[in-house]
Image (cartoon, rainbow, N blue to C red; front, top):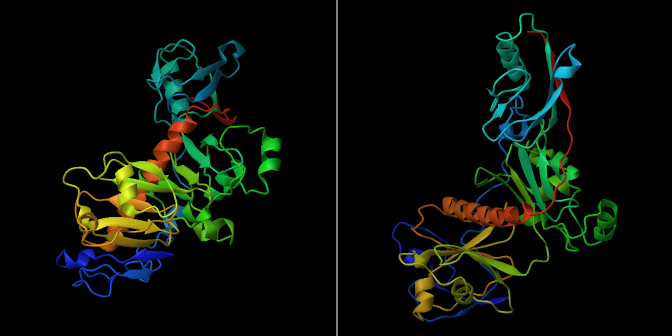
Length: 370
């Protein structure tokens, strides 16, 4: 690929030391260069270093929330058996008891609370048995190129590998037909496009988790097999996607369909152009694996004024227009990747909630005396 050289932002911002894209920052005349040259020869950020705590199962017990389904009965009194749903307010109504708030309580704590409350109405209370029949309050999102994408309940400790297996595994072009026929997937999300493990990610509380899907799924590296938490978002994109993501301080963050020789200015213009006060002298272009990305910083202002040549993009590039200048390259790269993951997660999540996903039955019983 032939791209044109552009002026480094290091010539414009004091204190930033970057490896030049050009032969020198003083030159104002554009010259041709070959290939995409990242700012650094090493990865700008290492997302594959997994904290050891992420590889340990959570020690907290399951806690109830709105939508969870319970079966409760007073032992020895079949007529008291009830199937209940935790209401939007976190309360359940059992037997002669008024509304009892169980939101955030474990099954054991819920049993103890019901036993104590029942003593106020029953002279000789009997033990209470509680069984969790269905989970709606704690879920994980498994979307993208998977055999059975959807929203799954998170009942107990679940690793990323277990969740991917539960969702049918990554879809490849060769396995698409058999997976679709076996699962009855139809139009629920899978296509004949293989999953792109280089750009797959897990989002937790708005941040990209340090997981290398290639190492986990192709090399069997269990150091990448983190335990998932409620509301984690796992996404495996298509390897055949011909698109560029434009994010940040633009009028409309969007996915731009890639066309031959798409340039930076064309992509930004397609997103409505930069907003007022955007810091356009440090526009980032991120390319490659999310765990080993390459990153270039383009002086978009110089390009627009004809003082530097335009920048040629490639499919799956991420373009980020910042609101403020960056101080460290790693933090800037992480900001771009987090923004990208959140944008993709929001779009794919919105699509997923319109699909009809069948609940997965679970059975966890609790029994103790008052």
